[in-house]
Structure formats: C-alpha cells, structure tokens
Image (cartoon, rainbow, N blue to C red; front, side):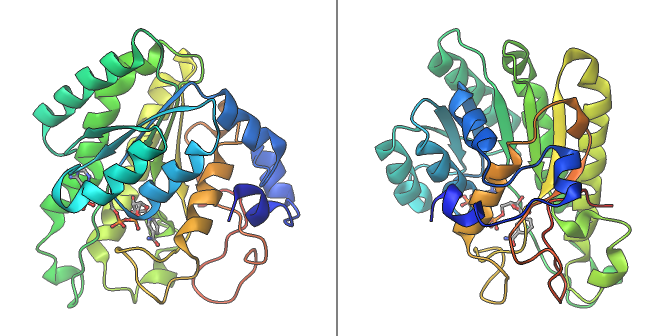
Length: 283
Ligand SMILES: NC(=O)c1ccc[n+]([C@@H]2O[C@H](COP(=O)([O-])OP(=O)(O)OC[C@H]3O[C@@H](n4cnc5c(N)ncnc54)[C@H](OP(=O)(O)O)[C@@H]3O)[C@@H](O)[C@H]2O)c1
C-alpha cells in the first residue's frame, strides 16, 4: 500500500493542523523528495525495514540504512535494501566502536554532502511477567533503548549540522507517556514503558539544547502494529505503520521541536480500546 492510499481519505483534525501534520499531503511527499540523505537505525526487520522501503520509492532520496547484521539473520533484509539502491551498513548501536565504523562509512558514502534526517528505530522490548518488582532487564533496556540512541545521535550531529533540514526523530511509543500510564498498566512490559519515558526525556533535552542551531528533535508514537516485537493482536499492519511514520515527516518547522507526536490513521481517531491515532500531540 502506498503512502497516498493509506492516508488520502483522512480528514485532518484541528490538532493535526496545529502541528502542521497533514496525512497524505503533497507536502509530506514533497519533503521526502527533497531529502538528500537519510539514516535509519534498526532496518533489519519490522518498522525500520518497511519504512526505508517506502522511502526508497521516492527516487531523489538517498538513504543509508543500518542493520545489526547484514549477513546471517540480516542477509535477506540487506539484499532487499541493496536492490532498491539503499546503502546498507552494519551498526550495532550499543557498541561505540561499531558506531564509529558506521560513521566513517556514512562520511564516505555521503562524499561531502550533508546528512538531513536521522531516525532511530532500533529497540528491544522485554517482558517482566510478574510486574515491576520482578524487573531484571532494566540495565540492558536502558542501554539499547536510551543510551545507544544518545550515542548514535551524538555521533551523527556533525554530519547533520552540514545540512539544512537537521531533523532527528526517535521511535517512541504511547507507553512513554506518564499521563497515559494508568491505561496501559496491565501490559507486562514495565521496563519498556520506563525506557520509552526516558527516551522522550532524552528527545526533549536534545530539542531544547539544539533548537538555537535550527535542529528539530521529536519523538513519535508510531501506533501498535504487527512485527516481531508485537504479534497478531496489534492494531495495524507494518506497512501502515511505516506509511504513517513517513507522514510524520510532513511536520515542518520548529513548532514540533521537543514534541511527542501520535500518528494519524484515518478511522482510528476515536477507536475503542487501548490506542487511538489522531495525529495530535501525546501527553
Ligand atoms: N511494533 C509496535 O507495535 C511498536 C509500537 C510502538 C513503538 N514501536 C517502536 O518502533 C520501533 C520499531 O519497532 P519494531 O516493532 O519494528 O521492532 P522489531 O521488529 O523488534 O525490530 C527492531 C529492530 O531493532 C534492531 N535492534 C535491536 N537492538 C539493536 C542494536 N543493539 N543495534 C542495532 N539494531 C538493533 C533489530 O535488529 P535485529 O533484526 O538484528 O534484531 C531490529 O531490526 C521501536 O523503537 C519500537 O519500540 C513499535
């Protein structure tokens, strides 16, 4: 399903327009076309893989995608990406040496051009079935979902500074909302909830510190969709997840700096159940 098919029937809400978020708009497609270069971490499967595939349909865009493994388990994904002319590099985000090696590859691949957009998809979600007291996975979860995001961001800043877009977005989740915490309390993922809250805090810190340089940092809750991380019970297919993520790129300008954004999926604005996707700002 293309971006336009997914989103063109939606009527933007006032909240969308306030954020400049126009699902399916030509603006969204235009910005994707204008992007000179783009890095996505965690493109070995799930949302990251689907997202760069969607982006690759925009012919003027140059993508660099990172996979934890481009051989072995990641071989098939790497093959797909290379076929659609995406530069693939190996990046184990929790390994600083790996980040430095990837950075050299990025510089070489950009050959003097700027990096415009950095997206961080790579994440893990471990359960703690017996509740918050039983959590024994917090340190690792912080390492992958927060510290590694920080390390990758810090490493890419010089390349982003060379560009004019200077856009960085982190894949968060509505579980990263303190206000919505009560609604999601029955899910057996307290560690994940905590690290996504921390990721949102990290995003705000970068946003406030770098706004004077024209950077836009924001966090996106991409919806609940079916990948390895979440199985059959989720609301959306991964293609819709990737399309809505692309729509979020239509949010232009400083007004979304430091915001925590919900995606817009037409028909899901006031859905019953745990998740609604109205394209607004999350608390
Ligand atoms: N699925 C959902 O419903 C949902 C909902 C809300 C938010 N999100 C967020 O959306 C993003 C993508 O989720 P997803 O469902 O697509 O996840 P996924 O299918 O589990 O894929 C996660 C990706 O992250 C990579 N990764 C994990 N640790 C890494 C590391 N240390 N270095 C490099 N790569 C690493 C994995 O690489 P390997 O393939 O090598 O393991 C994989 O490509 C995540 O940030 C997630 O928290 C997802």
